Length: 187
Image 1 (cartoon, rainbow, N blue to C red):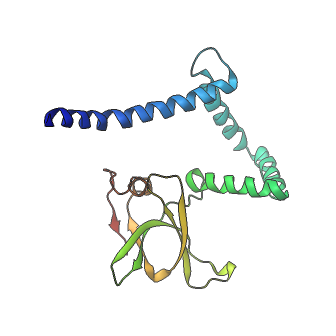
Image 2: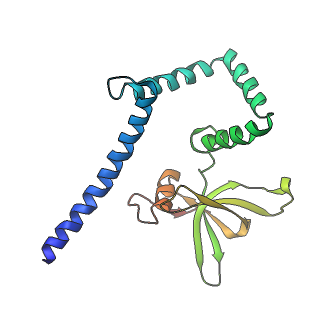
Image 3: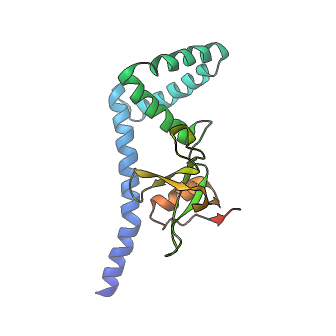
């Protein structure tokens, strides 16, 4: 009976992540395909990718950069639209833009007395513009969740980490069980 239970658990360890991944990918592709209502599965996804690449190519042109800049300025002036547009724009820039925000992993000392630390990403080195002196902003992603907390700590409480930001994010989000993560301390 012990062997049967072990085989069952090993089967779960293999099938659950695989099934979840296939399900999520299938759900995304199906949702995108349903927007276009093509009869051939996957064509809607392909059209979406090609559209994004085409818009990226066109927006990188000198003339269209001015149009994009004008559109950006206009959207950031509209009361309700500003809140939504800037939040989504800043979030996208944090992950894929030229100004990636989650590229400075740090170790934050929460309690030196109890030797308690958390891993996060330094997002702002100065908060003087909002009246907070000698503090930094650190984003703490949550494990197994697409959320996190922003904490404000003294500069002395952080230690820069050496490692790939993507691997460190995977380490945090996985609750520390991600296999590919070489973390070292900087400075």
